[in-house]
Length: 58
Image (cartoon, rainbow, N blue to C red):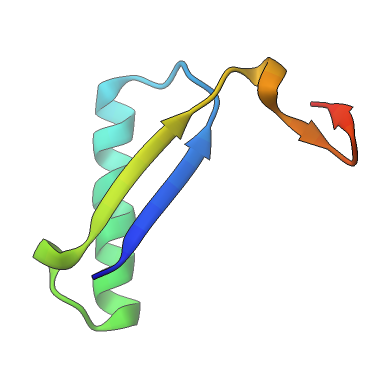
């Protein structure tokens, strides 16, 4: 059962997240040869001030 976590900044609409979750699910089914009902997508939205790369804020 694939559990796919997507980390991103807040601000996307529910419609965008719905569309993205469907696309990720389809890719998982096609590539991993699993059932759609077995794919779980979780959106982890963290404010931009919590993101760093190489020790520097993004």
